[in-house]
Length: 323
Image (cartoon, rainbow, N blue to C red; front, side, top):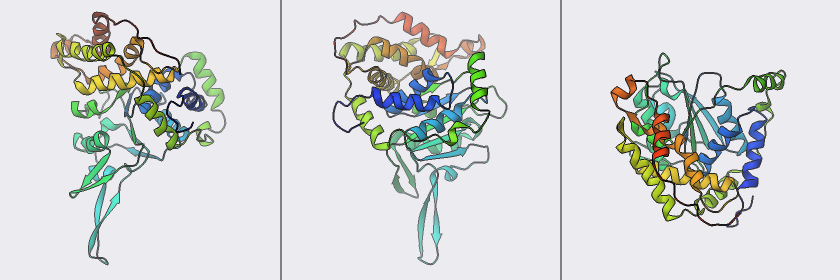
């Protein structure tokens, strides 16, 4: 992929998706959404049962995109400085030296993030929101591109802490990898009988390619009607009777960004209503805090999002061109 304005994202994305498919069987849909989130410049939260491929998806994306990769296993005794870094006094020089933590990388895998305490989880807030780390009053800029992919087990599992709303809001998308079908699982067993393909997986893009693709995504056109549609979806979550805290302006921005990325992945330079609708479950559901009575009744946030999508009138499709 070149750095020229208007370069197509589709061939770039196809290389990534095909490469990840060498490791994950039958998971192109979730990989496509994860790639859309990265192209939109966001961070990803993968929630699912253990053993469904969350960590492998993160590793495969990092390798495919040519990004530096660091993994941090979040545990109850993990300290914020274990993630961000710490200043160490050097007696020979009579001064403090900042020793960067694992967050200084291209793609950080925050594995089982909800097993760490809220204090350690919050160590990621500045990095995810502003692309920097401040330690002892000194600001250190993170590499670009910078992506956090966090995994978590469902909060009902023993030994987990619920992520605070401010932390959840920093994740552009929350996705579920899901269990494979029987046939996919059989294919996976055959493929993994020998050496794991992740060990021989190579990069099919560079960080510069990713930055160029992100630039193309930002230029994908969004009509005024679709901007209003995205904002209206967020507003409906706030007004929903079963929701205590709905999606805010960051949710609307996320809807627009992911919709732009999905349009570019489809070879278009303009967003369709279907792009916004496809983005909505992953963007909105994890940002909703349900009322106590709704939680006790077993209502799921995904059901609220589906209800909101049914209620909000869909604008007419814009006219544009195929990239």
